[in-house]
Length: 164
Length: 446
Image 1 (cartoon, chains in turn red, brown):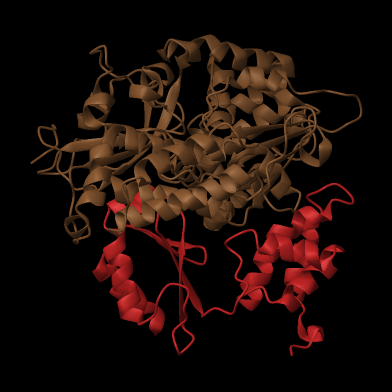
Image 2 (cartoon, rainbow over the protein chains, first blue to last red):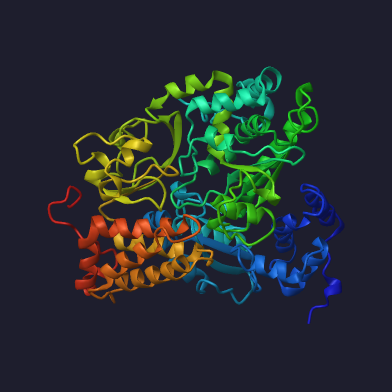
C-alpha cells in the first residue's frame, strides 16, 4: 500500500496550485480540480486513489468529488501507465487518411494492443476520439505533443527516438 | 477577404510586438477609449455575426440577453473546447495567432461588463494553452490586461482553463459545469447561462472564432462586416478541411462562394487528390448530414450550392445539410460510408455523458448495430432499426448531443442505403480489406 504521506507536490508545483486557485472567486476553489489533476498526472503519471485523495485535501473537497470527475474525463489515467502514453485518434477523418493501417503498425511494432503497456514499462497505447487536428491526420498525442501526418515510417522513427 | 487570418503566416505574429505592428490591439484602444460597452454591442449586432461554434445563433442577440443585476459579477467564457470531428479551425487560429483571440476577449469582455474572463480549452491542446498563457502574460505586461487597462478605468483578468477530454464540454452548460470542477453534464434550460451561468452568475459563452471577429467589427464597424458574405450569412468563416483533397487545412473564406469552387479551385482545396473522384462531403462537422457529390455541389433546384448557412441547409435534411462548425470532411470513391458512419457512431457513444436515457442507450445501440454491419454480421432489419433508434434519440435529450448522434446515422442511410444493404447481403465481399461498394452509374464510380 502506498503511504499517502509520501504524496506531496514539490514546492514549485504547490505554488502553481495556489496561483490557479486564485483565478476563481473565494470559495470556488473546486474549479481548480481539472488543472490540478493535470499537474498531478504530470507528477505521478496516473491518478491513483492516493493521488486523488491528496488532490481532494489540497482543494478542501471530498475525495468522491475528485473520483467522479477523474473518471468522467478521458485524459485522466486511473490505472498505471507506461512512461510514454501514445493516444491515437480513431475518429473518421484520421481513418480516411490511413489511420487504421498506421495504428495497426504501431501496435505490431510495440507488440501490444490498445490499453496495454509494454513489458519494459516504456509505452502504453490508448485510443481516443478526435484530437482536433483532422487535416493533419493520422494523429497521435504523447502528453502535450502532437505527432501529425503519421506514416508507418514516421511511427518507426518516433518509437526509436523515444526508446533511447 | 481575410479578417482573422490576414497576418497569420507573418513570422513572429504570436508575439505581441509583431502582432501590434500589424494593427493588433487597435480595437482595444478604440473600444475602451472611444466607445461605451453598449456601442460595442450595437456594432456586433449590426454585423450580423453568427456564432461560429456550430449553432449559428446571432452573437449580438446572445449578448443582449445577458442579465445585468447590480452587484453581481458577469462572466465571458470562451469556448475553445473544439472537439467536433472534422473541426480544427480554433486550434489553428490559437496556435498561430494567440493575440487575435486575446484582443477579441478584451473587447468582448468590455462590451459585456465582465471583469474576469476564462478561455476554456480542451485539455488535449495543452501546448496551445501554454501559447495562450504566454501571450496573456505579454498583454498584461503591456497594460492590455489587469487593472485600469490603457488608463480607461476598465479592469480585466483573463485565465486559461484546461478541460479533461470530453466532447460534451463543448455544450455551453456542460462547459460551465466543467469549469466549476464537476463532471460535464449539461444543465436543464432554463435558466439560461445569460441569467444563471458560471457559479450561478450571468454568463456569456462564445466560440473562439466568434470572439476573434469582434476586433475587426470594432475597428471597421458592424455595417462593413455585414457587407462581406451573402444575405444573413455575413462575414468570413474559417473552414477546416480534412480528407481526400489536394490541400487539407484551414481556410478563411467570405461566406457565399460556391462549394464547387471551394473544393476544386487552386485558391482553396485544389480539388480531389490525384486520380480520384468526389463521393461525399460532411460539410459542417461530424454531426451534420453527409451529402453525396451531386447534392453537395448543387441543390435539387439545380442551383449551385454555396458556402453559407442558408444554401447548405437548402432542401432541409432531405437533400441539404448545415454549415455547422465548418468542419469540412471530403471523401473520395475509396471511402466506405459504413465504416465512416461507424467511427462517428462510436464517437457519440463514447462521448454521451449518460444523463439522458435516449442518448445513453441509443448511441450504444447504434454503435453496436453499425459495428455488426461493418463486420459482416448485419441483419436485414438492422437498417430500419438504426433509423428507428436515431428517431427516438432526436429531440428527446437535454442537450444537442443526442441530435448530433442521430443525424449522421440517419443521413448516411438516407443517401447511401444501398451501401448498407451491400454490407448485409454480401458480408464476404464487404469485409475484405479495402472493399468499397460502387454504385452503378454514380459520378464517383470507377
